[in-house]
Structure formats: structure tokens, C-alpha cells
Amino acid sequence: MSILDTAKKKYEGNEAVLIAFVLGLILGPIISNTFGWQVSRGTSEAHIRAAVVEQQALFCVERVKATGQDTSGFEYSALKDIAKEWSVMPGQDAADYDVTYACSEKLGVK
Image (tube, rainbow, N blue to C red; front, side):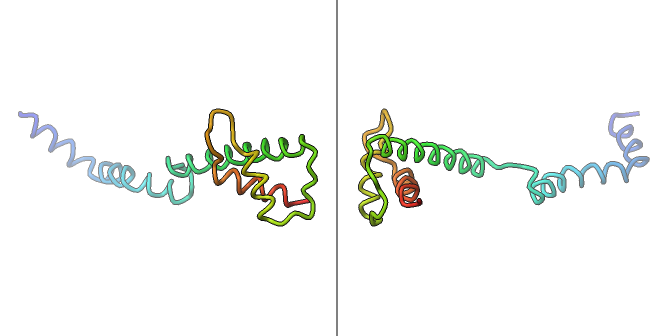
């Protein structure tokens, strides 16, 4: 009896189990992704980026408050200029646009 004959006999007895196993391998990831039980790399990176921008914007706001500037009544362009100055993080040459935008939004909210 060859290996092929042995595999054929095992398959004939367990057809339903093998079909269910293959369907589970195919449909399992699709179903879990549909329900949101998986996190893709892009989604994870977007969440991390948003958290970093939020934290740096808070640093920017605290830096502006430490200077004693009263930003109430400023228009958006003035808030953006202040935020651009104070949102440069250590080790960076220029301010990140997202951090500047978030900082200016936080400065405008009272």
C-alpha cells in the first residue's frame, strides 16, 4: 500500500472535517477582520501618529502658557504663528504641520 492510497482512504472518511477546516482557514480571517478583531498595520500607525501629535500639541500649549502670553481674542492666523514658533520639538529643524495645527486649535479653545 502506497502513501497515496493511505491518504486517499483517510480523506474518504473525513471529507466533511477537511472541508470545514479549509473553509475555516479561509473565512476565519475575513470574519475576524469584519468585526474589527484584527488591527492592520496602517490603522495601528495612524493611531500612534495621532497620539504623538496630540502629546506634542499639549507640549506646545504648555510652552505658550509658560511665556505668559494671553491668546484669548487672537484670530486663527495669529494663533497659527504662535503655534508654529512653539511647536518645534527638540531635535527637529521645523515644526510639524499637524502639531502646529493641533496646537493652534487648542490655543483657540477657551
